[in-house]
Length: 285
Length: 279
Image 1 (cartoon, each protein chain N blue to C red):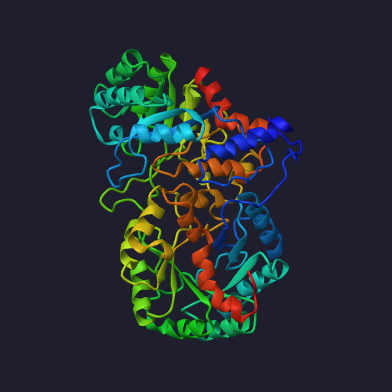
Image 2 (cartoon, each protein chain N blue to C red):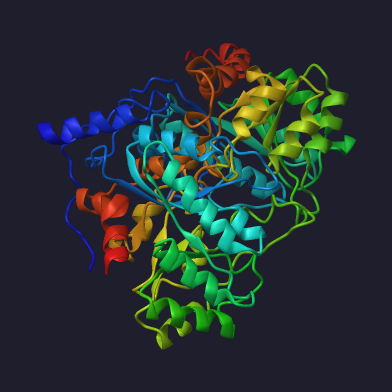
């Protein structure tokens, strides 16, 4: 009991005065130093200057919250065609981040010619083992041949794959750049052909998750999941080993994902698994 | 593999926080419970975990966009039924409609003048730029009821009767001395904040959009902290993501306290005092 209470207080302190000192969930929040955020992004979002935009600012913020590892993609990779250069820059920026808690995630655009060279470069030259995809921004569907080709090469190299369903609510996007969310329905069929692919879904809403719930190998993050006690409601029917902590910071306030863990009543082992265990196991599988 | 053992009960629940938090914007939908009071009870249990002291509740157990007079009455009856059980934790707002002026005026008398409700909710039945809504606003103001108007400005198009922040500004110009709350601040908040800036009687509701970083900071910067009010839009939204808009904002604790409770409380105090409700 003492250890549990100490852990909770230690955690509350990590909110840096911004949050609720004595707020409690029924289960013990994991101690500082064990958090893994699967979903952060560096760089300039073209339509808004987000707080914590620089790698140094984000690294510091995450460090203050007890996040020792954050998987960081790049907004520039969404919009630029020389993704190899973007990945190289991302690796450098993460390496120079003050708290060594940003781990670069390569972006690959399989609709581009010679995308295979980008993947080989990210894997062999930059030692990146996670690939982030933006099918909606890069104009392909999950039942397109290029995606299947990508899956096969990623599996051959034992790379982990993150599919980003959306960055921004389509009701608030620029009228000159409306990008609908990724349709996840073809994913199950694709994975039937490539069953060993390691796939994690980022920024899916609760209704969007319905398409991948039957595919038990697919993990998903909590950044866009909404509703009162939404996490515990999902876990009534879905194995908690599929849910990971992802904040979508700095586009979203980081505290949103953190407070979702408090709002739902979760078991200790569910919390441990969500904030680091599931993602670690997935990456190392 | 699913877990069905009891949840750990070793940590006590408390609603002690460093902030006093009142939630402007809560519904009885999206939450479990067979009755209105059961749903409000469940909402309050979660509110306790999140440090929220009071909830403003409006609309019934099902959303009806363009209610007829009987439906308006049923919607308000469900809220009355819910708040009766929790008078120290919940405030009721009467659901009214610009398409049902006479019925709405009747509901104002029944629920606010003669009943326990302290505010008014206008949703998407008709746009508030239409002057036909003015009798409702005039009577609500006379009763000192807090007036909340839903607004969105969706990139992919609004509902036919859905107001924009610009529509609310037109209403605000007709009633420059009446405080009006801009629900969702248009959702597309960077536009909504700009639209309402000129009218100092219009307040910014933070509720019901993604927890996009920078929203609260921009609202405070452009409108002043006294015009920004915390709300969640639960149960469609989580309390968590909406609380994060304030907890996570780059603001002082004093500014956060003003947003979390003080502004809403200031707007409510005249009607609370007139009803003898102490907070």
